[in-house]
Amino acid sequence: MLSPQPWTGLQVSKHHYARELAALGHDVIFANPPTGDGAIRLTPSDTANIILLDHPRMPLARAKYRATPLFVAAARFRARAIRKLVGAVDLLWDFDNARQFADHRPFRAPASILHVVDRLDPGDDMHRHADLILGIDASIVGDIAPEGRPSHVVGHGLSPLFAEAARVRLAAPRIRTADAPVTIGFIGNLAQPAMDRDRVAALVVAHPDCIFRFIGPVQGETAEIRAWVDGLAAQPNVEMAGLLTGDALIAATVDVDIWLLPYDVARDRNRGVNSHKLLEYFALGGEVVSSAIAAQADAPGIFMAAPGAPDELTEKLDAAIAAVREGRDTGWRARTELALANSYRANLDRIAAHLKDSST
View 1 (cartoon, rainbow, N blue to C red):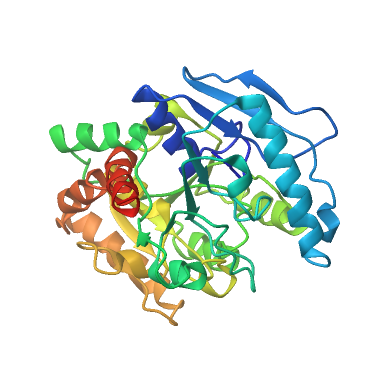
View 2 (cartoon, helix red, strand yellow):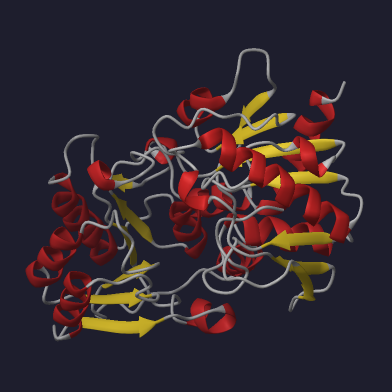
């Protein structure tokens, strides 16, 4: 499994797919992005059946775009060296939007998948000789899939942690204290480039009677982002929970009434086509207020701004707050069930079927 993100740190789609495969008894070699100057090496992970592969910076990395054929040739040499160390590979699963390996063939796997969860760089139309191409949206798949190559849309998945939280919420719905202040939550990296920080700050100031709880790290911050985070933290109605995982993360979500997804679509690499965050929010059972995200525009009872109308987010948040205070049911159960139907395990079954079809 080729990943643009390391095994440690924020856990995203490729980590969840790796864990699901391992839980099914498969042996997974998780290739961290190239870094440093050391040798290619294998080390155990914190999860049974998952081995971590580390390898040094790619040779000719600076030539990736200036002298692409040279970089691709060097990457083929690296792929052969990796295969020599790890031995035979049954399936190569490539999530690497950084295109470190533009050609899957030197790995000599009987089958390979190119799985695009973020839009590739402009001009990167390389299909990498993959047997199956997957993407989170038809527009992303269409950018790279050559005519006749098997390709499918597979949306974001729901991790086991959130799937279990969803089952708990369905079995024992939360009973809200009527006079409690409305709590508005956000989960994720506060330094995410596409986050609409100005709008978030304005929403906090405009709703002093609500609590805003931010759960997540500030990973990749700049001086500007740090100043924004410090400004939020200074507000009397803001709680900064920091990075939480596992049971501690779920515990911090129990009393959240509304979940907020405030993206600046113009700065979003994927242009607002999809977000895994919405499935997590649906699983947690509260109201959901979101910038325009095409894949979930028809989700039951979602409070979503229209495409091209980011200013509507304030209006949508006000409507969600009113729904909470009035005790209206906007379809939380249907949203939670929708999230469960899109677990990573369910996605894995879909992908296995697509892979089987592509080989026949």
